Length: 243
Image 1: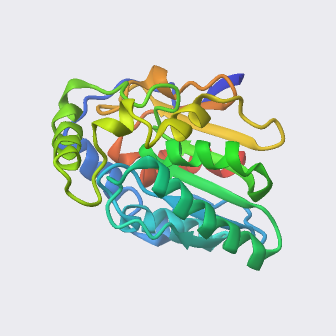
Image 2 (image 1 turned 30 degrees about the horizontal axis):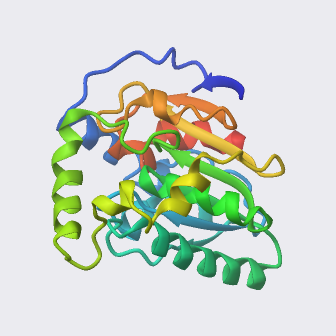
């Protein structure tokens, strides 16, 4: 693993969480005129994958920031990231293959939380399609390394899926055959030819930050909430030189 680095000059003070903090993070990029300088996209395609219970709208502001630097951004097409892992990855792979074919070059894949976990599996299966993977608070080494408060939502979706509600993962996704390949791919060695940036925060109130420290990744520490990963100016400012 590349040595972990933090936001320049921040000292990463541990601030208290809560709704006020999330609001501050949201406001930090509310006005495009105050956005940090974006990375140089140079026409590179970028696929953004939202987190659990989220859709593409959750990363729309980050997509705008990347476009301001010359990236060509693409949505994942996910309405709510609650579906069974295997069909989700299959759909994303076909989408990414089409993006790369049209662009004529590999893509940057940015995934928040569960979106980054899906992104890691995508790279293992199709490293030819990806130039760089960026994960934002993604528990790549243990999908259930989460804090107690997050269990309610995950348990509710798992129960609905087990009862047969469409679009929801089930208990078999964790232990059965339906997602066995995806679970194995998630833990497989990461292709050395693809760059891997894992952004994590010790202030993350959803995911246990240790689960984001994939040995294959360049770990980048920020001080933000889990929800703020995709829209906090500090995260963008730290990512810009890395991209």
